[in-house]
Image 1 (spheres, rainbow, N blue to C red):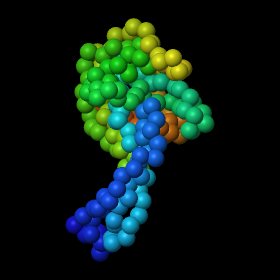
Image 2 (spheres, rainbow, N blue to C red; image 1 turned 90 degrees about the horizontal axis):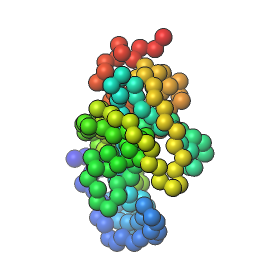
Image 3 (cartoon, helix red, strand yellow; image 1 turned 180 degrees about the horizontal axis):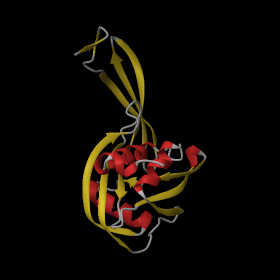
Image 4 (tube, one colour; image 1 turned 120 degrees about the vertical axis):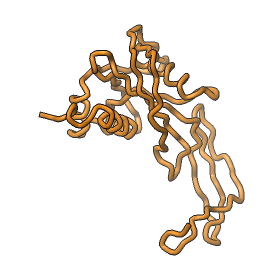
Length: 189
């Protein structure tokens, strides 16, 4: 395959070194040969994550609001979390939904998987639609402080259109929900 006259066959990896290892992520330096030249690609190695669109029986969507240090403020998001110890996607989704919102779901339907920032990160998120919700209680990690919001799909879409939702996985989730519910259900005004 060619694009603008250049081969898209890939790059030859010459060496990989770990520059940093944290609790959840690592920073790898890939020394590669690209187009006959040596260069370095910095890659954040991430175990993967899930995101959940929880829909209650009354049609309301369950969202969370939590402080995000890199953003410098609290963001409204769909529940989500990082996979632990080779967890399967649905197992992680069940755990994160319960921890963050206090809801259990009887039905999880995988919608799609996507990379958040493939230019520098291996993080791939699997998005689920959750239904058959039963309220229990939040089981937050010690370092988490999360508020739970329950609102109509129309209000969620309005928040997105007004810029109140800035989180990429949530934006993707809202558009996936819109596709499933139909645009008429989400008309604003």
